[in-house]
Structures are given as C-alpha cells and as structure tokens.
Length: 451
Ligand SMILES: [Zn+2]
Image (tube, rainbow, N blue to C red; front, side, top):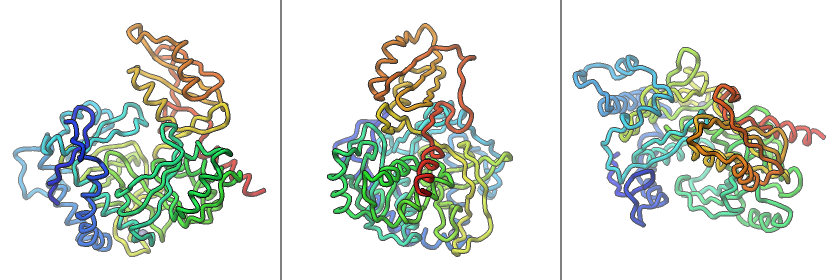
C-alpha cells in the first residue's frame, strides 16, 4: 500500500495543516484502500497461517531495513525473525529518551500522523505514524465487524465522561467504516436533560454501545437508576482499559447484550480483538503487530506497518498469556488472554458526578514536575501531592482553588513534598489512587441487580 496521500495532521511542531487536511478527510481517504486490504488480504490471512506468516516476514524485513539503527552490513539471506530475536527489548523509558532517534525521516512531515499515549505509566509518549495506520485500522475494523455480524453502516452510540465534551455531539466516523456515531457525555446526563437525551437515543436506535469500561459502567448506572431508558442495543464494545470480569458480567446483565472487548495501544492501534466464539481470548491483528512475551510474562511488540517510527521489540508493560493453539472459530491468528493492562478510575465531584482524569492529568503535566500523585477517597474531596523545587514557583493556595473549581470539589488539598516522600500507588496507574474504580462501580451495580 503506497502512502501517497497529501493529508496532514499537524501538531507538535509538524507543519501547520491546510484547511482540507482534516483528520476526518484522511480517514475517508483511507476507506477505499482499507476496504480493498480487507477484501484481498485480511479476510484470507485470518484463516491461513502460512499466508499471514509470509506477510509478517516481508513486513518485518522492511521494518528492520528502515530502522535508524539498522545494521548496514546485514545480509538479505538472514531470516528477519532471527535478526529480530537478536535485538534488545525496548523499555518505555528508552522509547521516551530515544524518540528522535527512532524517527526514520522517511515520511514527509506533512504526512505524519502524530498521536500521544495517555501517559498511564508516567510521561506520555508522542508517536509518529504514517497513512498506513488508517488503512490498516479500517481493514481490521471490517474484519472485526464481519466476525461480530455487524454491517459496515452500523449505528454506534459512544459514551464519554470527559468534562471537555458536550452532552451530545454528532460525529462523522469513517474510522468505523461507514458507520454513524452519536457521542454522549453520560456524566452530564441529569434529570433536566434526561427526556431530551432519551428521545434522541430512541430516534437514533443505536446497535452498539461503545466506550471504555468505566464510561460503560456509568451508563449502566444511569440506566439502572432510572435516569435513562434501556437502549435496546445488541452489543457492548469496550476498549482502552483492561475489562474486569465483574464489569463484563454486570454490563451484559443491564443491557441484555453481548460484551466484546478490544485491546489497543496508541503505539500500535488496535492490537487484538475478542473472539466471538471464544470469549476472553483476543485474536491478534498479526499483519500489523508481531507479539512476543518477555521472560516475566510482559508483552513485547513490534510494529510492522509504521515506516515513520521504528517501534521494535517494545515493552508497553502489559501482561498477557499467548495462545498458540488454533481457535474453535477456525481463525489461525494467535490469541492473547488474561490481559492485564491499565485500569483508570474516575474522579467524583461534590454532587456525585463522575469525570475522567485526563483534564487534571494534562494540567498537572503542564507544570513539568518531577513527580506527583492524586488521590480521592470520598466524593468531593481530592488530594494532590507534588514534588517541586524552588524553580517551579508553585502557589499551592491558587492551585488548590483552581482544582477545586475545575473539578467541582468541596475540598482540594495540594501538598508539596520531597521526592522521597511521594507515595505512588503500585500498579498500572501509579499516579492516581481513586476510589471510583471498575470494581467499585461494578460491585454497586451487582448488588442493585441482585435485589
Ligand atoms: Zn476465534
């Protein structure tokens, strides 16, 4: 697939986009080659391990050849898999410090698609992708739709708790093939607007409810508490965070729908999707990512479709088991199971409304501190601990006031400590310790359902 588009996604020092270089336009442009890639390749490689392995090898050969640190003396006769196995595993820290060196400069800066990781294990990482990401996304999406029995023009209701988003937005979503998407900020749903939102949802008649597990739980909670009518959807589709077993169970109960989960990372795009016939196991999109396991069970992945940045044997610090045996569905794509990645919590305001942590995270990250931690044990009360030196000139009073206002809290305590006294929580989200987790919401819903 040649990346011959002239579109731009201009951020972070990239050339400013022309008005027609719109992400939506680029995704639309990727529809035709993505559809063809699905029809001619991905539809077949999922059932033919030899075909898939051959494609993987050829793509890996290219990835190794264009890497900035490629061995110029390498011989084409060498099996790329052998060459790969001799390369060191790349930690997140190395990815951060070597970002510039990993950029290959093979893709015209105006064609680079730049995305930022969530920063769940510390600093966010800015990843460069090329056009092929959108094309592969579409092909993989179509493959998943076909497996789930969804038509390409599926109607998707996406739920969010991001305070920066409106109650309702109408989103053209070529990212989901030619589907139609309505986006709802479920955290902003209240008794005053419930009737309006209810009518809108009824008119829209969504088939799929899309959102991260926490946002799905908040939606289920609103339905269960009577603020929202049951949506009559047939499928719940989660992504972003590791899906807890109890969360899966209560979501299926509330909606009387099947739950399907997607494992994706900004560094790669959608990595693996849950098999409809073997729940809890995820077929890897092996045409785009080569997955290995490190000695301690952590996943190690190589991006096979990105000529803009070399992400080779990278360890995103997610754990999973790898299933080599063929699946009962007949697909030969290997599977992941028992995936342990991140699980974010939500911040709860003084009125009991949930909100995602992203705006607060961005705000604190902008201060450029060497360390920080946020904790919430009760609705409406938040504690922020920061490591700062004199050069940061932090006014704790002003900060505390701003955070209290922005997050609608009764109290916001800001403390400055030395690095030794910063207590970070263990686990995949060390910077946040929040009581409103998947386990918390799912358990409350479960107890309500069993009444
Ligand atoms: Zn399967």
